[in-house]
Image 1 (spheres, helix red, strand yellow):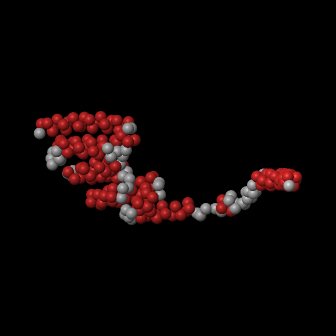
Image 2 (image 1 turned 120 degrees about the horizontal axis):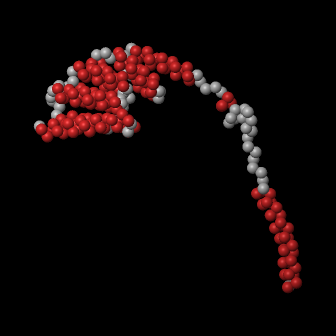
Image 3 (image 1 turned 180 degrees about the vertical axis):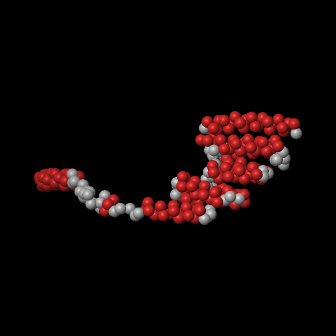
Length: 228
């Protein structure tokens, strides 16, 4: 019995050795398989070929037609053209339309309506619109128009223009043309609208001069507040 047992173990061992090496060869051949070849990337392959070779639609022509249409609408007084022009992300073209609309708005109420539309839709205010408002305001300054003009001028983001408006406002106040506006209200208005200017404008050379001017104006108004 013992001899038979050793004989069986010996036979099993002999069979296990080739099975072991066969398993190693099988696993090794699986690990060393080459990855599948990449799809061809020739001149006209699917990824780089026809999609890039096809010319895009004639967008420049469409854009030019759109600009022409918007220009014609602005000449006709259509303020909604400004919203579409703003969406084109071309500030120069937007300013051209706004200049045209400002030129058409040659009367005070029409100009205020244009300014109201621009601010209500959070559109940019440019220098020409602000200058037109200042000119109209100077003809008949009052409490409401003064606040509106200072705000619109600040929205134009021009430190020099804002300073000129502050100086004109102060002169009207000295003359008594703004008798219903107190020194404290005027100081708060000047300082508040100053922060409407962008940080870039406030930090510019013209912005520095404006700060010095506002400091001088503030001292004058504070003196008037103490007197009254």
